[in-house]
Image 1 (cartoon, rainbow, N blue to C red):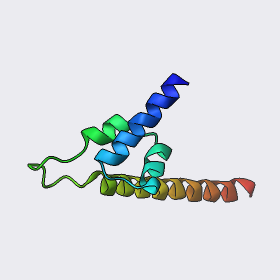
Image 2: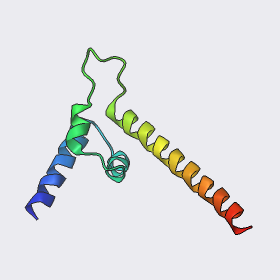
Image 3: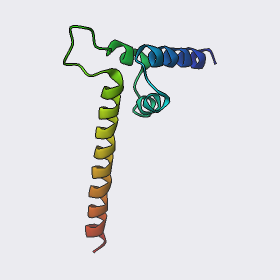
Image 4: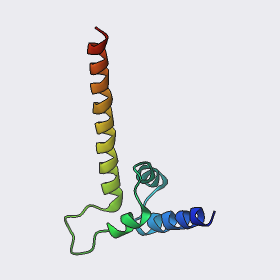
Length: 84
């Protein structure tokens, strides 16, 4: 139980520091991201090229979803040809 409570505290801290909403936190958890890695990826003032954490998570999540859909579609194509 103690580690679960610690994890919840870390997620709450990441949510606050990275200015994330519940949906973005859910996406990060679904992808298996660590709350400490989110905090480490907060762009500094000199990192103008770096996207804010919430944008970074959403882009990564979208890429994962697209990859999963492509994989699912290619499996269906293989099954169609295998049945023959």
